[in-house]
Structures are given as C-alpha cells and as structure tokens.
Image (cartoon, rainbow, N blue to C red; front, side):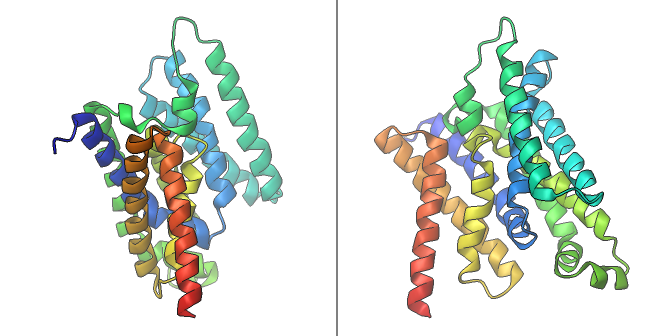
Length: 263
C-alpha cells in the first residue's frame, strides 16, 4: 500500500509532539500545572496574530507569546496572587484578544479552526524541520535537567540542600512548556494542547512505578494516540486534532479499567 506524503508528514509531526509532550506532561501532573499549561497554550492564538501582523514566522510568534504568558503567570504567582484566578483571567483574556486581533488583519486569509483545533494533515516539509528543532530542544532540556527537575518537584527544600536552584528549574519547565506549545499548535491546536500533555501522562501513571517509567509510558501512549487518532481521521473524515485527543481519552479510560482489574 502506498502512503501519501502528506500522511507521512502528519505522522512524523504527531510522533515528534508525542516525544516532547510525554515527559513534560508528567511534570505538569506532578506539579499540578494543568491550568498553567492551558493558559500558555491559549496565548498561542495571540502569538499567531502578532506573527501574521508583523510578518514573523508562526513558530517564533507562538513561542514568544507562550513564553511571555508563562513568565507573567510565574511572576504573579510568586508575588502571592491567587493562581487559579490569575490563570483564568490571563488564559481567557489572551485567547479573546488573540481572536479579536486576528479579525483586524487585512489581506490575510486565516482558518481559525486550524489554530484552535490543529490541522496536522497540512504540515509541510519546512514545518517538520522547525518542529524537529523544537522537539530536540525540549527533549534535550528534559534529559539534561531531569534529576534537578525531579528533585525540585519532590521538595524545593531538598533541592536547595543539594545545591540546586528551584527557581531555575521552574524557569526550565516554563521554557519547555512554551516550546511544546509552539511545536504542537499545528497538530492539535491551542485548545487541545493541554489535553495532549495531561491525558497520556495520567494514563501512564496508572501502571508506572518510577518517574522514568511514567515518562516513557506517556511518550508511548501519546504516540499510540497519534497513530489511532490519525488513522480514525483518515478513515472517517473526522478532524485530526480532536481525533487524536479522543484516542488519548480512550486509552486513559482503558488504563483505568485495566488498573482496576489488576488491583
């Protein structure tokens, strides 16, 4: 069977996102950063508007806006602001302002659904190179700082006693999260990036006995969700991004059932 080139590109893009999102999603769960990841992802739409308005690359605009959002949230949380309220205000504001800003762009045709829910089947060869760079940076950060990130997640006091800087580890997680948002925007869209971070990691946690096993399991389940979702999208002509997240949700439900049977 001959597989079309656009399907192979879509598959490669999805697998790269799975590789980047799996380990990071574990830290999102361990640190209870689900709403933080959503706020960062919603800022991507504002980044799209800025990129189109100032003729920047979409990857650069998305990365800068996501990083700015993550840094602002971190700074406000550090000053004692109620984190859930701060995230709610900033996430919805960034999304709304981004959508309004896009409507003011003149002479630019844009499919908002592609940025909100992903359009993995339109990934081009140049997109793959950019995504590969982002994935390599995220993976490199995770491998380089794994022990430090894990220690700071377990206990910041323990991290300090070992000579680590918890603030630096949080900054590294912030940068990695912004990179994943920029990489995953084309695959699952701004509204579903958080789901692809959280669901595979949550499913892997049911069976994992070590942090490393959970991270590897999250990568494997995210990759399987990409394969199943992309296959369902091609077979039933459904939106690719939501299909991938739906497949991840099905795997999560299956993991809960298997976990209950094992217990």
